[in-house]
Image 1 (tube, rainbow, N blue to C red):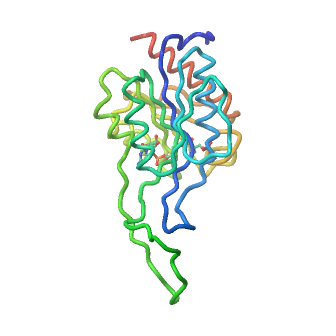
Image 2: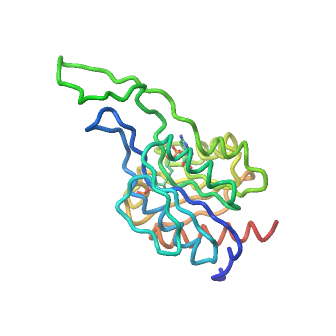
Image 3: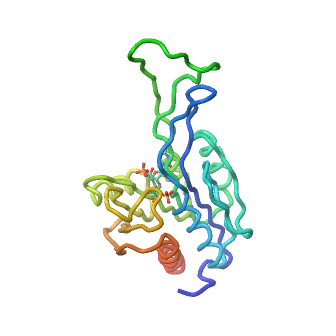
Amino acid sequence: ETPTILQGKRVLVTAGPTREPVDPVRYLTNRSSGKMGYALAEAAARAGAETVLVSGPADLTAPPEVRKVEVTTAAEMYEAVMREMKSSDVIIKAAAVADYTPVQTAERKIKKKGDRISLELRKTRDIAEELGKRKEGRFLVGFAAETDRVGENAAEKLRRKNLDLIVANDVTRAGAGFDEDTNIVTVYDQKGEVMSLPRMSKTEVARRLIGLIGERLNER
Ligand code: PMT
């Protein structure tokens, strides 16, 4: 891996969770900390890429050479990614985007009443899938956070979303997935498994992934 493997390339990374508002004081979210995506943005910048990070709410700082765009909801992340993708050569989707959002956001705090209430949700737009349709020459990398049938589920997402690579992490394993400082990943392309990494820091996982992406781009 050379430090300039992505010199002259423009890389867009997404990171963190999204927050879907229920009412003025409540939201639906997930356990993503943003660590994996921030590590990728840093590794891309170090490899010479002009790097943009579209980040959901995360308690992390990006290195100064990375341009950060902050978003809150899945809909905002969709808009920001569609705007930024036009000038990107590589898009890496490490964010954990909400699959469902409340049909209505109450204008006032929902009052406690009765023993049960239900919340109606509707599907959000799948950003990665939309990028897959509009990818043209872009190199698309998705993540798959899985709890079972990791390889099969990842391969299915790779095909459905028309990705070049998918990075699968089994989020039930200790030292992998959400909020951990380390991850355990297996990478697939359209033909099958291409790289399997033992547990290592997200910083190191990011360096390896950027190395692999750089190699793939340079083979083109
Ligand atoms: O942030 P950390 O705490 O460091 O944790 C890292 C991580 C576990 C969040 C990360 O490694 C990871 O796996 N991110 C993807 C999590 C996820 O939501 O996977 P998914 O299987 O639901 O989605 C598959 C792909 O489609 C992802 O690239 C996701 O960004 C994308 N997607 C999903 C839904 C949606 N509406 N739009 C999308 O683009």
